[in-house]
Length: 289
Image (cartoon, rainbow, N blue to C red):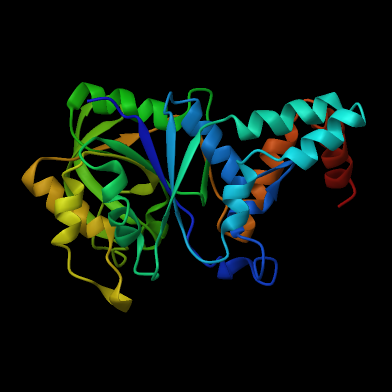
């Protein structure tokens, strides 16, 4: 089974970035010169996936509009001879086919995945969270697809975190069966300090078999009435198996203000036009302290 679709949940309110996100979706906040959602979609495209399923909510139409054709803007840029900008705008609108599904109530990540069942149906798919940006030479999702193709079971992306920070993440315990690949033996959501010796934290990338939908239907709401994807994954682990993959690349939590700033600096330093002068600026800034 080939992974042809990616589910991207974008229904969150973005409260950690208020007041900036009062009327602007958090996924449209800019990192250098493009919104975070574009980095996500470009990773999906770079992983040879042809369709994105956006899980949206009220007030998120700007995300769909960003990937749509804009006649007025393209005509204006063409008439003004701004061909480089025209090329970039056209690139965005032709990146990928986008389908939108509404999550009418904020009932958790598991519920956000569940509402895509009528669109995804019975094929494996990726889930990519917009809060996590991964800078990697080989797209993170593509790396995970290769693991899925090898083991034929669902895969979650993990990274090592300091043991004192494990209480902030979903944690995987497992047996390494290939370099960077673990057969998952236990999933623990935000474990209290001292309750696990593993520091493998789940981040926002998943390759899931369609059987996850049946597991989600059987997952009871947890704290706050939310359906947790981690709980459904634990059911899937018991019934079919589950693997964790320690990906290669740098991950930034763009849903956190400090992580967002780190991502901005990282991508600014790589920018073909800005990287050099920005690097010199940072050197002078550091030397002034």
